[in-house]
Image (cartoon, rainbow, N blue to C red):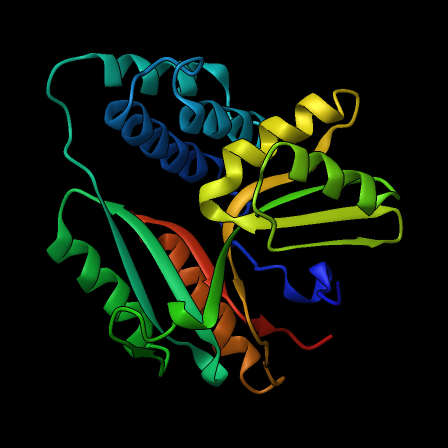
Length: 240
């Protein structure tokens, strides 16, 4: 349907090579999702999805179990979601999602990343309106009509679907994620999902010049080093 997944796929950058930091981020996410629902993945689809994602990223079982055990207890940390938006090096669009138990610390850390790299922190909605908040299912296949039929039979709302080079990419509103995934698994039980996530996809891209690249990389690294930053979305295309 004319949308190129490779061109529009958002980059979600995490701290490469720093396993302890990745484990810490997953531990916090798992705790929050379990605490806000129930700490049982069978009864909590969001938790089940996050556990599956953590396992794909090779998060050890003991890290997952510790977060769930912590969520089963009384009290604990009171984390809240926080989203910051702005314009990064080269004018690219940036969304930063955080989980925090101290808003003052988090906004100070994120603001420093923007100001120290010549970037600009914007108001809520300034940037996110230029992204689509979508669920993505991506898998090996050739027959997009068959996939569309399965979604229609399950009454799943679809934003877009495409087939390219033997890969089918299905886009749906974020609220349809669990319904779409269940419909897919029931219709195609033998096909494994390569991508299954809810994310922000930019409606347009911004080319980063070679001159802006070092500052862009510094900006992303600084954000990744922030304790409360969970995910980073941007529309930047980096030079070859």
